[in-house]
Length: 240
Image (cartoon, rainbow, N blue to C red; front, side, top):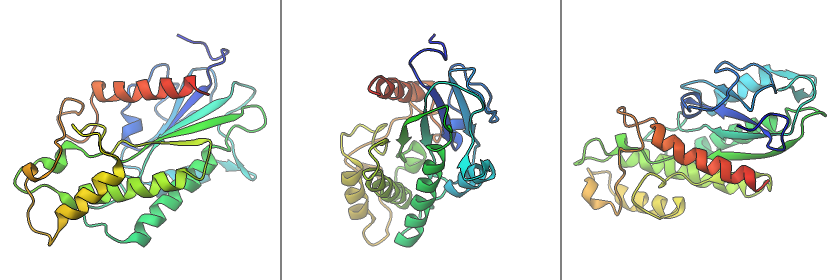
């Protein structure tokens, strides 16, 4: 285990249930407590939307900046995922999706400005929306709308992150599917499958999504699923 005095930065995990349920090592508290005494801390709540997280962050602002940490400490990075609770399977409104992404970016800006003068921000890693097994619960009537909404949100977040050199987007849309297609390619497939709105069977898709990386609810990641994300976080931190 690396101590907080080492070169490895402190990791702040922020977001919705995907963060709240993440089995993190050495996390100071599941309810946020400003600290740099451990390797990582968490600011998360199940059910949070991008707007919920943003309002929580705004409530923590003192003066003109968000104060996440007290006292001197190492540099820090942010690992975040939020937004899936904002979209509905019928979400086809570009303006609504744009508003969700605006809230995500505003939250990320606050998170990247939370260390004050003593704790430098080194970067942010954002795990994008993912295709989940519950969307295929009925093999004769796949929830194409949900796939489409997640794909559209993924594409919009990725585009905004391209504008920020210290923000990195992780394309998770097909990460747990037997497909190497990008979120853009999966979006185009979902658009084509939606067609006239009739029922679409699972066999009509070019990919399947397994359950081995998810809990029994077919929604939240299992320990194995989080292990994949852990590997990504570790690999990213090594490049900083």
